Image (cartoon, rainbow, N blue to C red):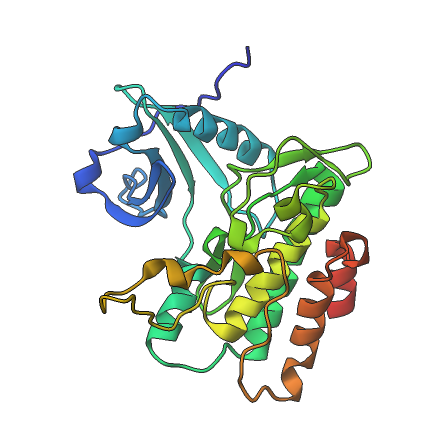
Length: 294
């Protein structure tokens, strides 16, 4: 049996005293202020991922422990930084991480609700560059498939000053050549590559590249992939929520949004189309995307 990861103690206030930043399956993410250094010098806050009380006896504690072990081994400017890990008095686990300003998914939602145009090409290319840099490190150096690339697992500091990949709860080891994933792929279906949806061939590092392409598409369309944002009413006049999800299109390249995109978007569209080739062997590697952007 593997030994659970443990770090030196840090204080975790009761959940009602914490400001919630986000959530995931079985966990909440909170803002954690830290005590000032001696002399009253303030220090930066952390983001705290904590298993919810309702899932105290579930497997989410082990998953968070596994994620902490992975994150502690990683060191890259475009990957969220590990800070500490703790088993709480009630047996739940808590992972402290570097805190960023906001998730890209939340930013896209806010931009859509404000009725704004797609993100400027320079912002999208910055996301492409930073995410590709993180994936090149994971795929080539660490031999790790992130396994759940999507806008909500990409964090942004400031005005796209730095973009960081987070949430390694679905990560899988890659084989010695850095290609085939060793384990069952469990990424979010909307962002999953066709080979992962069909389950007819091996999932490789190219699955992360497909998902990255869909993130760039999200910044153009301002919606998650394969989600219909129009309102649908059933026969009784009530909203039919099932109409929003278009499962039959999972694993396909979504059409470009009906916007008048200028020439500055040509490299964005080219990367999106290359990343979303149906044949995983035709997709570029993260390193090749970086070379294209440079």
